[in-house]
Length: 528
Image 1 (cartoon, rainbow, N blue to C red):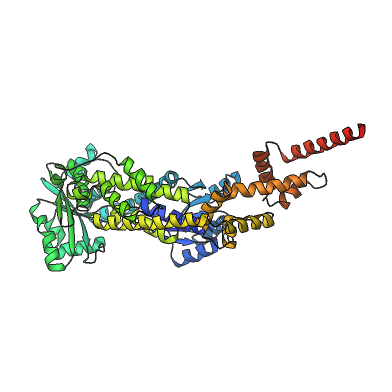
Image 2 (image 1 turned 45 degrees about the vertical axis):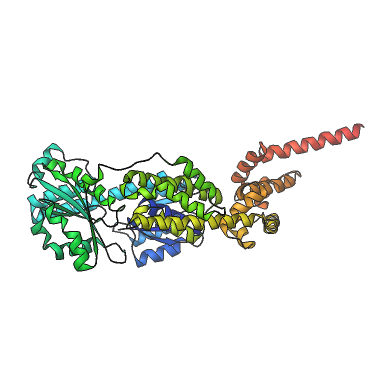
């Protein structure tokens, strides 16, 4: 498993990135979190990480100071792959990132597709390095056989889409006809077994694997892959596991292939057959032939998903449960086409859950923890486990939205927040500070503030600062830099940009315009 460290001083950003990555790449990353560079450096000293995603601007130790410390710490060796996050599109930051040889430089707010593309590229580079080292070791022991095994493993890890013509000669030694099986194991409590535990279980049931099967491999997810001369020796394994080991073994089996060039197609068939055991709790072995016929598929439940989204935040729990059952066609579950279930689960994530968080802000840590699991149905052994978790998540979100709407009726907290902004606009101020001041959670406050003022916190704060800046600019005694500092902007460049954005002219033009209007007014008064 690839290890990762996410470093950001915003707690919700750290947790949100972690949930987003784990949902997109389940079981691929072990992720730790740090709130600043110093904390991250200490975690890295305790355990080196393969990937570090870090913000630039942080208290105690910023991102570039962290990178410099890591460079000294890993001098002479291979350091972690680094991805820089920043809320500022600043060329100096980009130059610094290049100097530190980071993998990429991403601007906040982070776009899912950009982040996933970077992680996929880093993962691909890492897999290539590992594959190269593995092939060298294999060639030193038994060149011909191990080269063939490396080619098969390369196909399983999707490094190649199909054997090239010149590779068929190397794969020809694979006896045909053959059947490919992909296996997953579970303990009695539903916990998924590690790949080496699955292999150990199968060896206890069937004997030494290298002697019983043509090839014994592991794919990129660590699943056990067996190449067998036939299906008979595979069919008894699930029942033996249940009877002798009190453990569950699930197997997906491909068709019987007639030549080595069908290896990758058989692997994909076996993987798909294994996924179909998700719909049938009693099915220990699923043949790919059973997934082709008699499967039901329905149109995308667009109207039902809109209805489900609209129900959240209402006192209609029973109807919500019934609608969820209709969306998934629970009564037809054993006969459903798995692609319908997968697409429906993705649609619920994108059209319902993601939309809730977009409209109502980041949820509580508990809700995000549930979303991290229920956001990928294959985090569960069977569909019914996923369904119960999703149902519970929806009911939790229902309560969460109800709480937000209740908070909106409490105007006193918002009035207190506005007074605090008016009194502290000249200080470095952010929404976390104000929400803490009025004792509301960050996510609740964000939504309640927008409802109460009609504007986001950032826009409202800009308007307050620009209003006070205009009062200072109406005199001719304070320099523009001093005005910028006096109303809380980080620098005069930012002040000028925001002023022009709000008023349509620069601060200097505003001052000149106001002084000219004053002079004209005094001249008129003198003439009269």
